[in-house]
Every structure is written in structure tokens, then in C-alpha cells.
Image (spheres, rainbow, N blue to C red):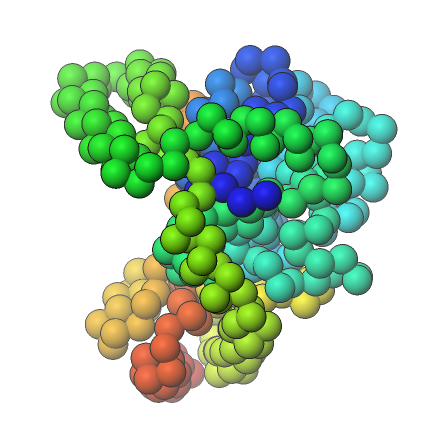
Length: 342
Ligand SMILES: Cc1ncc(COP(=O)(O)O)c(C=O)c1O
């Protein structure tokens, strides 16, 4: 079923599961922060697990261990940057454990692993049609499930969502104003986080909404482009992989299955910031997504060595740019690799 965003899709699914307040929702420490806000809006507690350095996805061994020693009700298993997360294996290992696996395929639809498609691997799955996604409709999201019962409950919850874009915009402005006041008035980090999460819950209409007719039209018009776009992303990521594989000091990803890269992401052992600046100076859309989230959500003492190291070393290259910009990206990377190799 369709909703107004990927964040809304996660929120509606979590609400439909009817978990006790404060129940833990386990996310990879490296993911998009709005996905984590969905748990906060639903009055649940985000918790985090470290990631693997080969795929940048949730470390499944650690996730299974955390399930055994904490009250984890849901694992949000994300295919980060489009790299397929081995959700079939995770579900096998959690069988009979009562943990719900919510697949976050916002960045990954089109991917595949051992015959399972991204978007069809979880107990339920979500996708996003937000800006920069494979099917960019300027916004929108979907919940995918085989369960009629879950679908009925999601539909019921989604009926209560605001669909008027002007009202959502106004709610967002109100939230921004309230956050600005909070930032000026509360400095102590624990108190700040507590107040921030309360504000997020109170202003959740700023980010949760039903899908508009215009977005449904955009999606119907774009849907047929998915295969072609996925193919282009794959080709571009393969090209970058080939160019960068000769360079010293870089660690290239080793995704499993057939991924559809949302970004081409790699690690730089030394001097990441200089390389990132050099790419940006040459007009490449390069970023250092995503900030480790445990520090933001009240686990400052927890140790997540891989996600911290990833944040210090990652470079993401946008492979979804138009044809001319792509030629410039390729040229800039070839030029920089020559410098690195010398
Ligand atoms: C992995 C992931 N999950 C969820 C979302 C939320 O989707 P939306 O922006 O449509 O709310 C995003 C957004 O970028 C994302 O990258």
C-alpha cells in the first residue's frame, strides 16, 4: 500500500505491530536518520547494531546476539547504499524468536539475493520514492507485505494521516521553529535529546503523511523506467569499481548478491577529507553519509568500531546523475586515480 514517504511507511508498520511503548527497534548504526525517527514517532526506542565493513550493512551476528540479550521487537534490516543485506539468512536465524524483520529497501529496490528480490525479503518491507531514489517521484513510499491482517491494520492507521501538502508544510515550519527554540534553550545533551524526541513526537505530522494523487500519478508514469535505471546504476558502479580497483589505500565494497547501487561507496584508509574535497572541487556529487546514529540517540558510551571507522573513511559517489554529469564524474575520478597511483 502507498503512503506519503518511506519514513511514514516504517512508522505505519511499527504502529500496526502494536508493540508495548519503549520496545526496542534495532537499526544498523549507519542508516538514514529519518528512518530512525519513525520509531521515535511511534513511541518506541531505537537501538543500534554495528555494521560490516565489506557491505556496510548491519552485522547480522551481532544483531542476533543483541536480540538474545535485549527486548528487541523489530529489526529494521536496511540495504544500505543498495547493497543487499542477507535478510533471508537473518530470518532463518531468528526463526521462532518472535522478532519481526522489517526490510528497509528504500535505497535498494531492483536488487536480488539467491532468488529473493529486495522489497520481498522481510516479514514486511518498505520502499521510498523520495528525492534521489531509484524511482524519484519527489516523495512517496510503500509498505509491502503478504499478510492481509497486517495490511488491514496499516490501511486503518494510514487513513488517519494528513494528506494536505500545505498543512504538512505548515507542520514542518512549526517543528523547525520549536527545534530552533529548543536548541537555544537546552544545552545539556541528555536533556536535549529527551526534549527533542518529545518535540518530534508532538510534531510528527511534519514528516508523516498520506500519498497525494499527484504522487500516485508520478509513480504510474515512472514505474516502467525502473529496470532501465537499475541497469544504468549497476553499469556505472561497475565502471567506478574498475577504475578505483587499481588505486592504493582504498577499500572497495564487496556486496553480496546482485545489488543495485544507490551510491557507489568506498573507504579511503588515509586522507579521506582531501580526496573528498578534490572530488567536490571537480563537480562530483560526493558525500560522507551517514553519521553513526547511536551517538545521537542516547548510547554515547556504546562502541561501534566499524560504523565510526566507516564515517571517518567513506566516500559516496552519486551514480544517479544525468549523462553529461556522469561523463564529468568519470573523468574526474580517472584523473584523481592517476594522481593516487603515482
Ligand atoms: C534507508 C532509508 N530508509 C528510509 C528513508 C526514508 O524515506 P523518505 O525520505 O521517503 O521518508 C530513507 C530516505 O532517504 C532512506 O535512505
